[in-house]
Image (cartoon, rainbow, N blue to C red):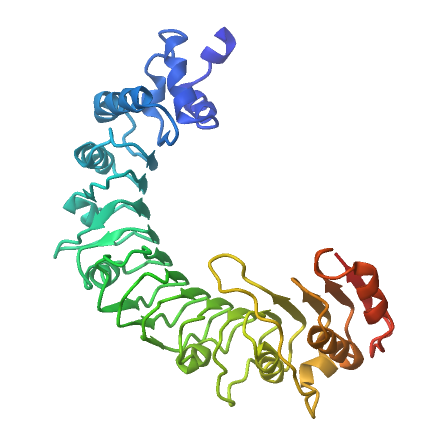
Length: 419
């Protein structure tokens, strides 16, 4: 220990950053040399999830006493994960104010307990010039003041929070000029206050994830993000609503689960530049869209008419290389068997010229499913692998192997695999 204590404060702090904050604090009992060293740590992570009430109370008193005395001129990150009623909104507000006084760069707050008592964050959080990352989760009311300026904020994550009114998020986003990464997950509660229109208009945004569960009740949403590269949309709203999405010419990857959206024309038209697409929809889109750059396609098989949707997508994707058929089990309606389908009169261009891999998850071996696999095997000239994933309860693997292995294959190098 003496040899370690002889190192510089800079090196010792780097060592302490490698262990949890609680462990770093415990080094204060080692010697005078270590007593206050942890108080210069630039990164702090305090977590209380499953501890007892006395443990919670000790942590609350510790933070009240020590956080205002922290010696680091800049707190690079402060993370508070608190799940107990002993942590009061006024405590959290004070700790956030302390972090702001130390020019905090990354702030993450996860706060939940029952019965809920909402935290309203201090208004000067929204004028923090150096804040780069802000992540908020749980019983927090986002009440954005009229004066907002977050010139350095690049990452914003808002999960299962409350919003003061429908304009709250729009006002916040409009004052984040360099925001690149945004994730919004609304609460699955009927009484939530995010009613009206949800607007995301951020020219600088490169990554956007929106999760809107069944329990929400809003009129619709508008998305204007012309420089977006990654897009994730889970739209499970129970009520009729609209989704207006402007073109995203630089989009590379998209994940869209829109089982409740009745009109997906705006959505499809905005994402035609993607290279990777995962889609779950019960609505067939109009002809006319082309995914010229699409290389990898994942299609959810939950819709009863999914085969028609699949072949529309194959026809619209002339350069497709990988195809994955899957089923979303979480928060989803029961799986519908594939309906009878008529073999297309023409073979999609990608099947003949570019398709190299087929992967079917949740395969049950029903005749309609087998017909689709056999059709692709018979026509995919450049197919290298066809991987079928199932369970023993669905269909005996030996029987499935026998049926599909005997089918003709256009590609002499195609390997048929079962998992």
